[in-house]
Image (cartoon, rainbow, N blue to C red; front, top):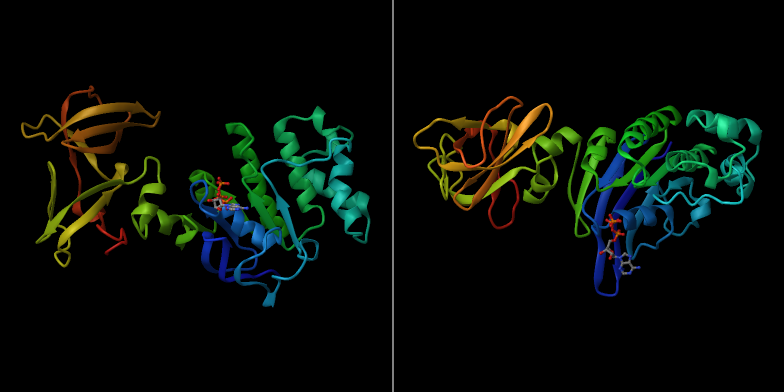
Length: 348
Ligand code: ATP
């Protein structure tokens, strides 16, 4: 069992606030991903849970017990960093066994090491030194070292960032599988939204030390709480346009969308996703020009300029259009997201 509670957890260095009033309960066996741009406070949050950084305020509880004052070694957490931090003079077997020795874990160490190494498919490499391994294999040694003593909590800080694209995908699947098999509670830090969306039960989106939204990957994608989340999640990010809404019609520059909710009026930011709109060609009143085209394999991303606004719309892969062609975006009212223009908060 490991339910983790963060209550008003804050980290200050002088007047600078790295993490601001973090409040969240992470359920036993949940896979939680902290996602956000560089410097938003992800690693600091993680380090406070691990005990590598003191919280300046707030409480950290595991299964209802406050652990703020416990030494890192007395917290039942295992951490995997982006740098593997393996001992170069020890072979793979010794590296994996190390936490068992240091913590004087009782039981059959040999069997535990073999089980952990088998989980990450390293059985044939136990005699090798880290220098004799590929980056992906080293990363798997670091994972095996974290799982060997079967902790209740895994903390993983960008553990895939040194791997190439293919290894990243396979190791990602392995991590998800390990956390499921070992029934651990996992907190995983990344700035890669694809990693976040594929791994997480819930995602916490952070910016400038503050939690912006907590939700399932689908909730975060379908109902972003504010323009920061809307502009951060999705590839490409949501199109956002400033304009005015009145009687259910939004106008901005050369764009006009009708049929929107009538209860909102005044200046707003309207958002829509590239895949929810369509490109229209051959209209005499086309209001945009094709600015760039990206072939994505399964689709074509058409970026168009409507006056001062740049919009991206996804079309089918065999859509034929050239840069400079006159086009319009057909934007159905029911796929639009409305945000307060000043605060950026979602309105409906
Ligand atoms: P990245 O994705 O780049 O690793 P992050 O979201 O993990 O970023 P943190 O490492 O948690 O970010 O840092 C959060 C903020 O706190 C940053 O602005 C950073 O400069 C600041 N910070 C981190 N450590 C210290 C420190 N020891 N003293 C002062 N400021 C710090």
